[in-house]
Image (cartoon, rainbow, N blue to C red; front, side, top):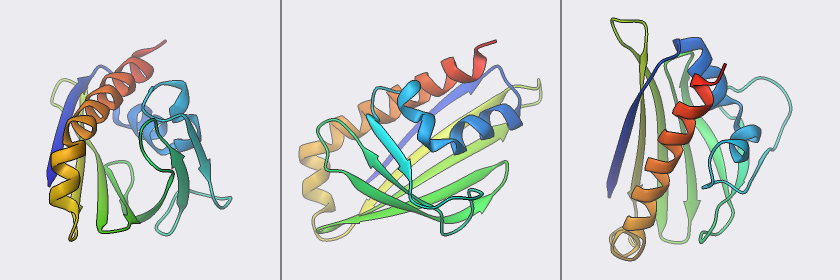
Length: 140
């Protein structure tokens, strides 16, 4: 299962990157995250992890597997029967704005079933996260 949401943001790449990688503050700008806690101190790099709590979903630990500041970070999480991969991309646009792309890919023996039962929630969460990111980044 693959879900994609994108939004154009009137802010520069560095601003969007800073907001996206400050995961402990996500609950301030998206209702899809009720709690977020980094599991180790230091810079946000490959191997960094965070525990996220979301409405209607079990808490999950996400670990960064790829990062190319300030353009993209990918993190992954496992739950019984489903492997989730979240991609957070910041794409510069010619006029100085950016396009933020949020991608969720779910694989594994139960991914199809999860997609049938929870696909609507995943799509809704991605849309709310994109809208919240835009609002947060465009704040003065």
